[in-house]
Image (cartoon, rainbow, N blue to C red; front, top):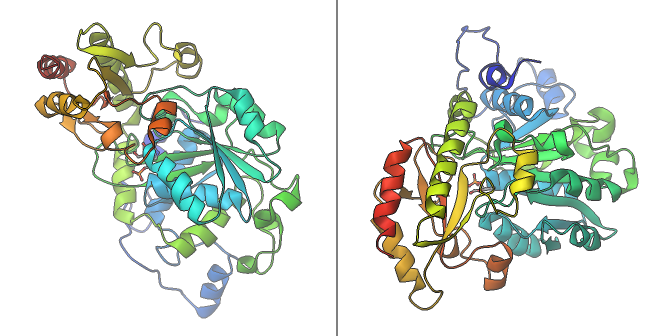
Length: 430
Ligand SMILES: Cc1ncc(COP(=O)(O)O)c(C=O)c1O
């Protein structure tokens, strides 16, 4: 197995026929022609693998899938249209009919919307727990619970999850742990090495790094054995009409059956397919993942240290700082650096004037941009309470560690001195 830096450039693609293109090509076509009706019938019945229709997959997407699986140390992957779609299809495939989800309270706001609102519409119950409270994870598990879900490093407060401990709770209950590793990135932490069974990403963020394209990926680590308790997992172990009544577990087995279910059912039926062009854009970004993430991590720590001693800042939530409650977990899970997405609270009272005071600071920034995104080459800020996490109740925001004065910062690749000068100029208005 080659090293991370080589895999991020080479995994999943060997130049060859038809044109020997050195860089993976974009297969910009909606559909593929079959040599014969027999070939078409085999592909539709999943008797053979090949190109069929771009809602199901494209060769460009498959290169991306192999590459991200290689970076996460997984067995297979499915790429979809967005991180939101990756979380949705992963959890839908695991909960099946009648399943229940236990999720951390410390999540990206869009994921909370999905779990609390849309999943409720679908009749899928979700229990939220404090991710640091192992007893709460254990107590929330019911006979029908099918999955535990959390972020390796949570957006926006950067709480670091004790992945191994939560994986042990999941496995004691005979269910898998799914980790959203969007903020963590496979360069800084590979949740599969700590017991996670499935890893999801918003590829829109660090995997791309250029902020041009939406995408999402789920990696199957090939560790969760759905065949051990077949009655619990009928979506894998019962006859499946889409593969001639063979069980997916029988036909595809460990490390492949999950991807087959996600593609043949959820992506096929709901249609959140990744465009070949976006798959290609994400591949361009992945080639420089380690370089970008290390530099952004170093810059973010410098900004966090600067903000920590600034009189206009009440608190900095960065697990690389002395005194941060997740510092020990960061040292254990993130030895190559702490992610560059962190938050800080302005030293202003929480009252009717708070939004105006926060706005004055954010609107004064000139180098750091106000954008609802992270992991970009550009440094970006957001105000979670009125943007990404605005649909949450006050209690939910408090459980996630977000106040009305919290500003999220995603450090980019600019000169840190320019970023510090920009912050100082804006903070002088407090
Ligand atoms: C941690 C996390 N997961 C998932 C998503 C959703 O990803 P996307 O915006 O690509 O749908 C985001 C987006 O901000 C995120 O930060």
